[in-house]
Length: 191
Image (cartoon, rainbow, N blue to C red; front, side, top):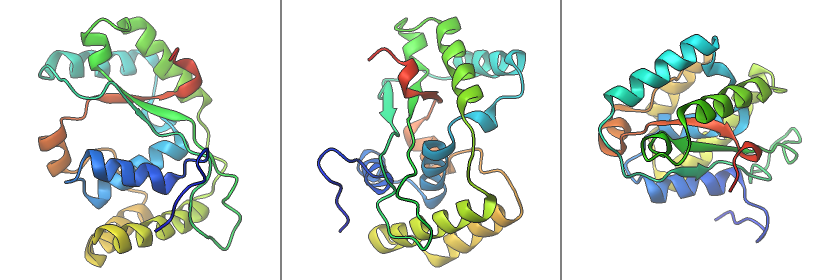
């Protein structure tokens, strides 16, 4: 078992937290978590008008939710050994539930602004090849600790190789956990 130093949360710790929070999560859902933790929301934004429209549509169509308002994705190190030096990779993002708008904890405009600023701040210093190498190691960790099948891994890796976006959670995850959130850069939140 991989453990973090008491003050050093790892990406693998975040994956295990997701397993505890959402025991029926699928490999695709862990991929989404790792991708979001590393890269933030930059891949979501085309322009402010589109971001506004999608956020309004989701808010208008979602059932009332009582989920966690914030899931911390930040980490200090990956928590696995790699051929390349990945020990300096860090992420500083959170999943912030749309329920914070619904419950009037944050205004629609403030939430949207934080999401857009987060998207503009997110960047990838990692090539596709480095991301695939990193994901392959995370995938092996997940297979070893959570017993996902090699067939699931092969299917997901084929989508990654083809540059097919993994934009949605698995059907199981969506039906059971009703995820409605955006990725926001943690320093933008007043916690």
